[in-house]
Length: 400
Length: 82
Image (cartoon, rainbow over all chains, first blue to last red; front, top):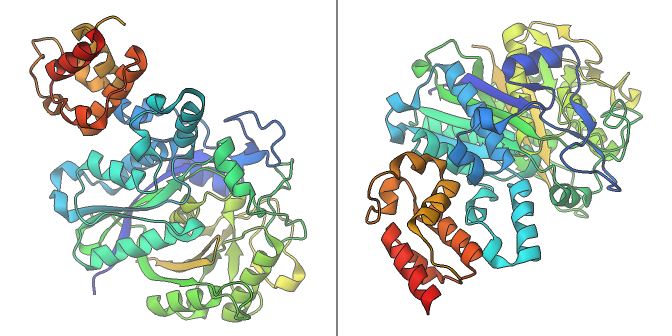
């Protein structure tokens, strides 16, 4: 069977714009979480977020597209440029039906959407721009990337909330196996507007902390919810034989499950997602060198993940990390960024740290990499993601 | 309300898509908008802006017929004169 490999990465993250800045910040334990600046947080109960800093759309997005698309799409357009350049791929030189775009999205273009809805409410329907019709829906980023780069192969968007980043990569691998030559995948989300964030607050899973140093502390006694963020990662996935450069690694395994409804009495299915991804990768638990945890930061969800990891790997059976403690949870972009981070970790044979957690709760029996990066031989990395409403996904990326 | 002039229309076209500015020098009255890079959504946006500046409701069926600058000017100015 063909091998789907990642040949290019582009990143827009709260603690670094571009792969080099992001990876340096992540190894240094530098967080991008701070008080929201996109709007006046006033009396909103959630005041902290991971915002992508220093991103000037005028520098990175063509003028026409800038006016027609939301911030989430701006971030993806820039990250895609970086990823394509990294892969050494020029879409203009490849047949258009052999390239496809499959991104994850969970919140849509809420900044654009809120602006237009405010015009609707304040001034009436004549004042709502025509681009509202395409800028704010889930598939906007995939569509704009497809048009911009002339990628007319099988395209799609995966909307599985915060698990989406892995589901998109899993689907990208499926397209490579079906004969597509190059897939742009991953995802970005950006809903740091009052309306976008208000919709999230209703889940009661967000941290109301005021201190960036303690607001998001997964697996610890200080866990009190998560900090939201914006951004994500875009990756170029290709068939191994077609790669122009040495790939970062292979998409070796992937699986997704859906939890039974609340009150069913049946257990959550995260463990099955993990075991299925390992089986798909033909890797046994003792072959996994590091786990990039979902790390919700919500006590009962942390416990469920720690239970699943302990059941699969044994107590303290594998190093676990959550670099998203430096970015907040990026929704559909989060798992994509985790997967990209896992590939960078394999490249440099170093596990990036979890920050702001002194030690995990002893009952979780996790070997959590805290404070400092840890050098280790890394061949197989497991990435775990969950989305609100019962989505679970797991992926294994492996050195070539 | 004053009539919509070609210059005003060009300004709106550039607001909708800055890339068309370079193609508006010659006689463009009968140039197909799609050939200028203005797709159906861009025409919808142009019509939306004319609705705002000239306070003239334009039904979707009329927008579908707007394929050249002349079509737009003729439609809008006939209704404004009425």
